[in-house]
Image (cartoon, rainbow, N blue to C red):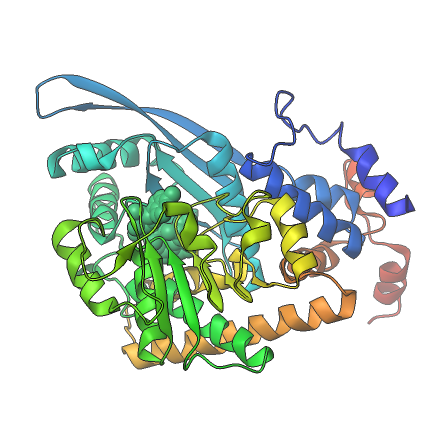
Length: 462
Ligand code: NAD
């Protein structure tokens, strides 16, 4: 065991990991942190900084009572976690789902923190969710849940403090309700409090497509790294919502063949290629893929293991596990969803030589254009779609090459390399406000002092 390993292992009892949390493959927060720990060791991250980055800043649990259409009162549980705001306002989606847990929201908030740092946009990370099943709720009930949840967490929301966006089962309309509720409380319109809202209400052109577009851009870069191109590449997509369907459509437009697609309701397969536009039209009318007859159906799980060049998990967490990872045939996995691959599966994929584009890079297109939206709202000056897409492309291509360079430098998997790139801003940040070596010591004495070399610089008039 190395000295660094000992240093971090010793810290584990102090850093307040939830006592009843065993290191389970299914626990998204622990699975994510296992990879972060690896990057921290390689970076020799200052222990004080490590402790700060390993714990969420704020965790809020609220009860959300609403009147159902039946006249009964129902109370839902809502969460909002602000993971880290040292680089700027917290930024993160809100999901409505029965599987939402505090542990999941914590992990998603941490991912947002790393993601914003990786693509170098001035936001921290947050996430929120309400435990509910929107498929069983009317539009009126959904609106009441959204507005009540917004009111319950209103003290943390704001363009300078915490800015929500859409996530699983939430969309532009939900963002419009949040913005309206917040603006009612503030007595004036505050467009920059949410992103991913309708263009008519201050949303950005290109935001709806941004996450899928980002998946397309980084997949194209990864294919080029392997000497291939999108034209003719065979793609399988798990999850046919905002991210999965748009990624599939943009890749198909670039000449890729979408051989499989699935959602919660069914999985479809056609080795010669599915008609993506037709599938999107089908889902728009029926809200699910089930019932589509122009392709063969396959067992749900098989969408991950069909013969293809690129697999895009774009549904939910922990779908690629130690059980199915050995059977994956794709050369590239583009993680459209957050946390689709367990830590155990990572090792198997690495041994198989699968090129993984990690979530914090693969789906960073969404938050990047959310940042553009926030900038446009605050400036009151809106860009055309071509400008949005060009700036998105530049940021993702640069971030992709930074991750590749870091992977080569440290001889590590792309995921660990992306965590190293993502952690780097805090090292610079720390350097700017104090010396990494003496800071914990200075803080423990209750005041900040200049390190010796800085004192010399100041004394020397530098
Ligand atoms: P969405 O609600 O629009 O779509 C989710 C899709 O996944 C639906 O088609 C649903 O039926 C399907 N699905 C759910 N469970 C499934 C399962 N077990 N097997 C197959 N399909 C399943 O959500 P989205 O916005 O597309 O988000 C998908 C993922 O991408 C989430 O992990 C989200 O956190 C992540 N993400 C979204 C954005 C964004 O801008 N929307 C940005 C970054 C990351």
